[in-house]
Amino acid sequence: MTNQKRPLVAVIGAGNMGTAILKGLKNLNKYDLLVQNPENPRVSKLAGQLGFELVHDNEAVVAKQPQFVILTTPAPVTLDVAKELKKLPASTFVISSAAGVPLHKLNRRITNSIVAAMIPNTPVAVNAGTIGLAMDANVSDKERATVVDFLSQLGQVIEVPEKQLDIIGVVGGCGPAFVDVFMDAMSDAAVAHGMNRQTAYQVIASMVKGSGALALATKQSPSALRDEVTSPAGTTIRGVMALEKHGMRHAVIEAVNKASD
Ligand SMILES: NC(=O)C1=CN([C@@H]2O[C@H](COP(=O)(O)OP(=O)(O)OC[C@H]3O[C@@H](n4cnc5c(N)ncnc54)[C@H](O)[C@@H]3O)[C@@H](O)[C@H]2O)C=CC1
Ligand SMILES: O=C(O)[C@@H]1CCC=N1
Image (cartoon, rainbow, N blue to C red; front, top):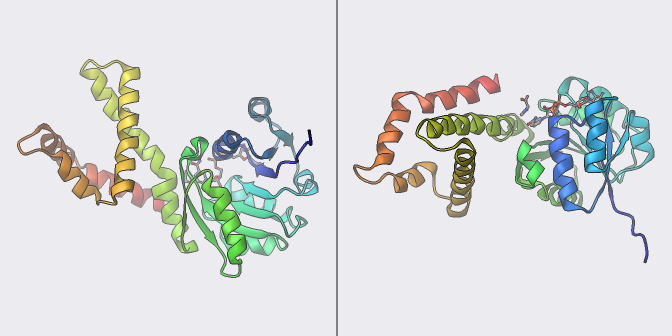
């Protein structure tokens, strides 16, 4: 039997987002995984769990010539890291997830390889992410398709002009945390009404998943979908009016505004 070599994907920075991406890639079972992270017992343990090779400097990443390099480093150090990737071959695609780090600054440091900027979210861990993606106009259609096809395995890829990545970062990137607050509050209320905690989590997460799936499949507006649930003189409209009375709509708008500051 021949031992076919699998494409290599390097992830630089295995924190929350890096780990989510590594889990999504591991699920695909078609890439070899390499991680660069400063020494850290959490990351060493993760290497054993997810089966990736762990290195501690970018020279080692460059030497292995990965097909894709994903930057999931804290935004303030990302440009310094990018500088050390200058010697990557032209065939490598570098995809940065660092919120607020512009493409032109990455391109100035990574001069050989094709560079893309994305804003993923944590559901990439289960290949159900939402990924905003921007690339320069000089990237060819073929190169663009390679990046989109690769990332599509982690979730839905939405190509946008770079200036829209910031708001995708809030709505798509921070969004899961806002939904988590909603689910947590709803589960507290369900428990107060006698539902056991684990059942509450299961029911609520399934309901959120189904609501998203319905919105995507039907392309109906959220308000039209809401109207289909609110039976005349029924229970839902009373709940919706309570949400309005207590300012949920305003709270959500303010959350997006504050996260965008
Ligand atoms: N957490 C999220 O949901 C999202 C995060 N992002 C972006 O992803 C990046 C990482 O965010 P988090 O994972 O939340 O942060 P984090 O703090 O959980 O992870 C950062 C990781 O990078 C490592 N690191 C620090 N300096 C490094 C260096 N010089 N070389 C290699 N690794 C280094 C840290 O040890 C840590 O493991 C940020 O730029 C953020 O804007 C983007 C979208 C969503
Ligand atoms: O909280 C943050 O700054 C990152 C960017 C989007 C989601 N998490």
